[in-house]
Length: 546
Image (cartoon, rainbow, N blue to C red):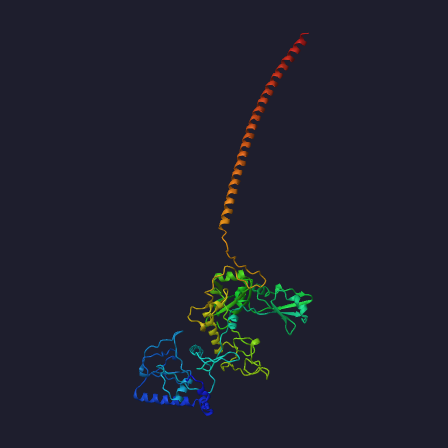
C-alpha cells in the first residue's frame, strides 16, 4: 500500500467504483486460479484441511502460496504448494506479525509493482456486504502504524492501512478509568420538590445534589462508607418536614463490597443459591449471575455484602459450599472504564467539551433531533457493524480499551495506591496477568480513606536540630530522681520496721507486767482468804467458850 494518500484522492470516479465493486481483485483472483490450475496439471497436490490462523509466514520456501476460497465459509480448505507437511507453529501473543489486507493486494495490482512479501499470501473474494474488522488483526495494524492524522474535532488518529479511526488515550481517560465512580442516589419525594431552599434540609452528607424534572432529589457522594450506609432503607426516615421519602436503591454496591463465587455448577438455580446464602449471611445486598461467564458446566456468581467484617470473612475463607460442592471465592475487581461522550459517542472526552454541533444517535449515527430514533436501524458509526456505537463489542472501543490498559501499564503512577484493576482476557500480555496495580508506588503507612469530612493526616516534621542531648539529660535526671525515690522508700521502710519492733517489745513488756501483777493479786487474794478464815475460826471458838 502506498504511503501517500494522494493516490486515492486523484483517482477517477470510475476507478473508485471499480475498486468498490472489486473488479481488480476479481481479475487477480482469476489469474491466481488459472495459475493454480496449470500447476495442478503439472504436479498433483494434496488438499489439506488446515487452520489459517496457524500458518507460519516466515517459511523457507518463497514460492509457496496459500489460497483460500470464500465461497463456503463453513468449509474452508487450504492448498499447500510442494507438499509441505511441516507442522505450523502458532503465533504467540506479542510476536511480530505481518498483516496484508485486501487493500494492499488491490493497490499492488493497480500499480503493477512487484513487492517483496511473506512466503504465504492470503486472498479472499470481496463481497458487497459490510464486514466487521477482525479484532486481533485490527489491534496489530494499529500498533504497526505510526503515521496519524489529527482531526480538529475529537483528535482522531486515522490509520493509513485500514482507514479505521483510532482514538487517542488522554489524561482525562486515564483519570476516569482509575477513579471510583459511585452511582447517584435517588430519593422520590411526596409531595415533589420544587424549592431548592426546602431541599437543603434533605441533602446533608451529599457532595453534589440537584432536583430532577420529576421533582425528586438526586445526590452524589464520594464517601464510600456513607454510600454503603445510604444503600439501606432502614437508615432513611419516613418523613422530613411533611415530605415522604422513598429511596430508590442502586442495583450493586461498590466493588469494595463485592465478591465473586467462581465455577458454580449450572445445575444450581440462582433462586436456590440466593436462599442458601441469605440464610448464612445476613448482610447480603444483591446476588446475580455475571454476564458472559456461563460455560458448558459452570458460571460465576457476584454477591454484594453490606457488612465489611462479614465480607472479609468470606474472602479470607477462600471457599464456600453451594449444594454440597466447594466453590472458589475471590474479590471482585472492576475493569477500567471508558470515558464516552454522550453527545457524539466518541471515547476520550465528555459532553461538556464536545465540539459536535448535534447530538448523534448511538443506534444509527444520525442527528437525534431529526426523526424517531427509538426504532431506527442499528449501525455503528465507528466501524459500520450491526451494534450500537457505545457497545463494547465494537472493535474501535476494544482497541481503545487495549490502548488504555497499555497506557496504564506503561504509567503505573497514574493508578492510586488503593486501586486494583482487572485486565480483560484480550488485553493480557500473558495468561497469568490478571490484575493491574501500582507496583512502583511505595506502600502507605496509613489507612486510605476517600471521605471528605475527615481531618487530613499531618506531614512528619522535619528534623532541623538534634534532640538526643536533651533527651539524654532528661533521662539522667529521671534516673536520679528515681534513685532518690528508692532511697526514701528504703528509709521509710526501715523506720516502719524499727517502730514495729519497738511496739512488739513494748507489748511483750506490758504483757509480762500484766502477768506479774496478776500473780501478785492472786497470791494476795489467797493470803487474805486464809487470814480471814483463821480469824473467823478463832472468833467462833472464843464465842463458844464464853
